[in-house]
Image (cartoon, one colour):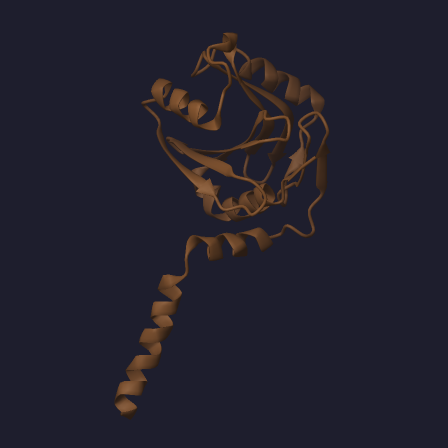
Length: 194
């Protein structure tokens, strides 16, 4: 009996660890560095959130150069992403943009997040990407992970109270992904609709 108990307890413990679902993992991520970060209020997009650890607001001069580059003809001529705020992480050379997503020329009566993803998939077949729902108790958030060589991009899409699609867009190098991802997700979990 003692020999059986000796092996039974480790097996039960292992089973409990393996049976933990993603929501438990997400709950742990929500706690990462979220309490000590600066709260950003964006009245134009009707949201507030906590900035991820070690990310800073980008100077206006640099933001203007980026906006010029982004608004040129891009990967997808049908979707217009208009960044309103820019942040960067100097230690990892990473970029974080926040803005709204619209369809060019009103091709559909109303753009939904699902339509956006369908259009994105159709015109970016060469990219490696995956979509998932981010567990969030307040409102649904769709996550898109895109890999281009050594660059990993995360797009977090959700609707504000005006039914506009808001996109949090992070671009980081693959080697920094493991370290930055928990603070990124913690920041996304901190989003509040105004």
